[in-house]
Picture 1 (cartoon, rainbow, N blue to C red):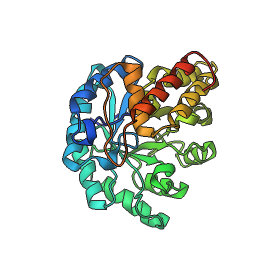
Picture 2 (cartoon, one colour):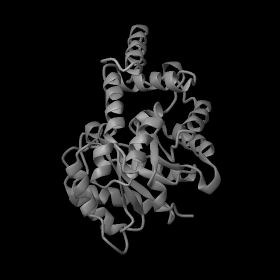
Picture 3 (cartoon, rainbow, N blue to C red):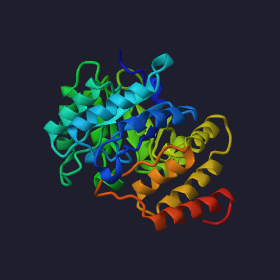
Picture 4 (cartoon, helix red, strand yellow):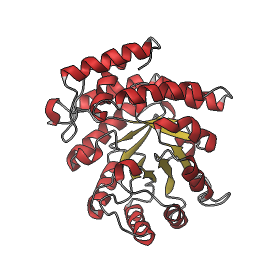
Length: 313
């Protein structure tokens, strides 16, 4: 059954991938408990193997095991949580394989970054690249474009989105826009037809530092890395916007927490914060990322204490 577009209207977590100490193996047993905890906080979906999920560090065979574990933990009444799996690799054939493997493993859709290794391609080449991946998918396969210029080094231009959407209006679910630029987000929305094929395309807020701003710009759903550790806070921003409340207040609280993590190696700090807030066992990064050293762990815990007391961080 095809994924209903409305299932993208909630809040998805860009889930971290758990590794054993030293990054040796994927710790698939950790995944289910983390998803169960986030589900109680209102999360409606999981984006696995993305940026926060260290997707480029996960091998092909490991990817399938991760998606299978995420899908198993995400099952439930009404279809359970939405599962979208990152699939972009440096080569087109590997991306096609990763995308199809993810769908075979149970993902509802695949997330596609632009071909990040290639920095000087034109719009035509990028449209061809996205189209080749989408056309390789089974008839029920769906894709979510993933704009992450800070990490990928390139972004998805407006005309590329328009071109891919025109070619594949029934296969393209939406775009996760992590650029944090509301004007770019608004231009993305302008590419969506008002009716007919492609009119259900979703533009999703993907920048933790700008969720409130992007919801005001018209995003209907969100994807958050910080929701790994503070899902209720991130959900509050979305809820406040929809209910006519004050989304900027929880956004400011989230930004303070975001600033704390940015004082440390980012992915290692996020995994340490998940351990602090959820009570789950500590999970580890895979090189070239690194875990926090004991001094950094103490500094993060002290900063969190000041944050919770409302003191300057």
